[in-house]
Image 1 (cartoon, rainbow, N blue to C red):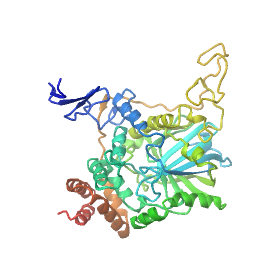
Image 2: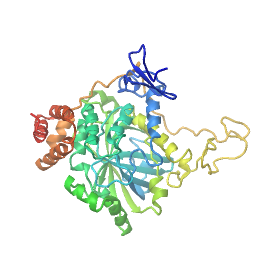
Image 3: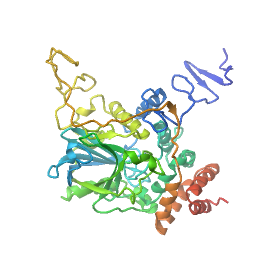
Image 4: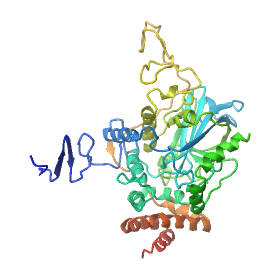
Length: 505
């Protein structure tokens, strides 16, 4: 048989030992099944929640989660610290989560700050979102609040997450992250993903370059549910406010520091705490009645959107104090594992599609990166008793149970471990809809991006435009035109200024 031959499907097949590759580039799963929609997860109705039967989504995420060994796929470079969280007053009206009830109680926490795209050896000052992950060791188990230093995100559907990171990472043929090709890859994806326009107004402002983790905000980004003891639920968004205020640097200083002191933010955090000082943040929340979600001009579950603070004001909830450095970086910072799926009673996931994909992907990544029993490591282990029938796996050592019984229900062990009694009244959600792949109706990819641009001072607008021109100018001309079109839809002046900087008529 010849090496290449034509098929009835109009494609050309190249035979390389066992591999058969379609030359017409038709998108398929790893099983070779054609993919007809690679933009939208299967959801109950257009707004979710996401269905576990979406085998294409699970395949993409599961494969993506295993692409790096042993470095994190994203958030590889990080710094961490121990401390505590203390609520100001009981939040019982909104949630029955016990760590949010007693103002006298200090809940131990571990925080990991990080850059998102860069590898472990990259500079702290590179233009990038910053991860802001908090692990609360509560009396009801671990709660992870995993967010970023910017309030919105690039995408709204988890099925696009592997593509997004692939576009942002070094090119697969050269492994060069800062070449013209890399800029074309980044802007190619962004220009073809209009929902990213809002995020660009944040990332390419000076919020995208920092030199201190002590002076940046944190956001949960996604929308969560708080549920009180009566089973009443409310939507919630999280905001962390640094006690020392927000401080940024421009791209020129960021570039200089990347060469002179690439570990600036990591060093600053460590040395501040080592000197006996504390690093503090205040937790604020925004609340929205679930009955009001469809009354908004935007979709409240869309992570590319913010909630207007004049309509949903910030409510101070408590303070977080970092007061102890890790004793061993690898054991505590590198092996720290977070997942939005780590929730406690009183806090639940909303139908936010991206959040639901993250709840699977984060924990799945850690099982691959660190091992099946990663939660037995001291930095990840809950500070309450763990009792279940999960056994074995690599590096299993915790004596969670002995004897002949490793199943439930049982009589041989007296029914132990048995199910815990319900605390409070569970929230009830009504979900219906055809299982479909469909974009949300209220996508409006440009309004908030324009509002964000117009809210900036002239200096910040100048920096935003200059930063975009500097980066986008390295991309191919058709990509520049496409991106300018998106920015113009957000704000005419914004688009015109970037076009002028790129010498585009």
